[in-house]
Length: 435
Ligand code: UDX
Image 1 (cartoon, protein in one colour):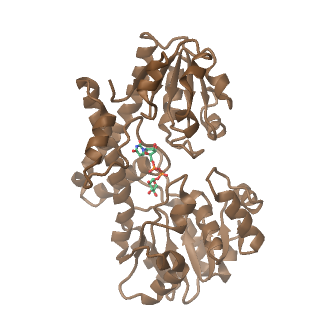
Image 2: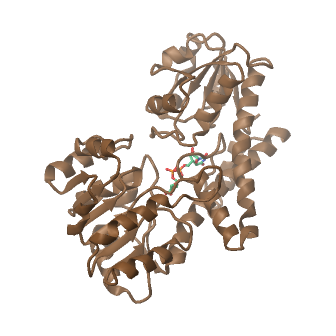
Image 3: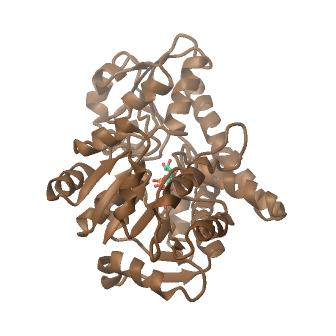
């Protein structure tokens, strides 16, 4: 298939590289000339395991190319919309500017039999609106809404072997289904379930899934709050309830909470859209999910103050981890970066490190001190804050580390260390939701 992918951010760049890997001819189109140049040089503009190899092999096979010129879409049979839908400034709702302009710019190049496939996360109702607009200008073109569920850090695997494929479309559009099935033939052949439904349901599948995941994390973090006042242990609680297969242990890791470019903005946009549709009461619980999540950041700062003897003023604090989760350099709405910045604002002298996210963090908070070296970050620290559970931090040797710091005090913001091991090595160990 000849495919265009419009928008080469996280979603689009990975999708384009994966489609080329499957044997399709792909052109990735983006308005950002710098990003396009990097991608054409085989350099992903973000850290994602597996992407450099996939890009290089796609480019050298001749099946993958990136451009800023939308007219390159003219030769393609299928067009994936993969542009961002960020949160609007000072509002909860999603900003659809990029989706709308992608469709408008694509319209002149659509011919009879073309298929547009929407992958961006959009408020329910968007696909029907775009479908009407496409039909106005190009009656022979079809639209399928095909939400993407990829996780950063696993984006390549999630794209090539998704849990499920969801197609939202107008009833009876079998020709369009047939084309998309051909594109995803490998995944379908491997038994990936495919759900065909209407536009609205397909849009809701995505935001409902993210709302559920956010709720699951905030549920266990609410339990952590109760554990903190009752002397209970939230990790043991999560292990115990997680054995119930109806509940499941995944996404029950209590700690600093969720961040990133998706969950926070998606639950807010979902609330805003439900409000517009007159169903705001149905989602008021998501406001609480958001509040619980934000309270974890404040609690972590309180813990830091506590272990520093009641005041952060002049204390040397080492922050380990800035990315919103391990195996990512993404600091969008990162709980770790937000805590690091707050500690500094409250008078601590922070040195922060991360295996991949220092550069992106420094762009957002240039006033923080960063180091690429873990040793430099922890040297003479009055306390260590572990805020993103990178494997190299989980594997740290408490005895070796004790030789570098001013005081052996650690706050485990991700409940990823063994408290017994650290305490027996002489450390004061504190965590969220644990005695
Ligand atoms: C998420 C969804 O998982 C994915 O399906 C969707 O397509 C995009 O949004 P992603 O943003 O990559 O993916 O991150 P995810 O792995 O879901 O983690 C989100 C946040 O939740 C991270 O900050 C992570 O640290 C936090 N988290 C996750 C917890 O605090 N506890 C958990 O148990 C799991």
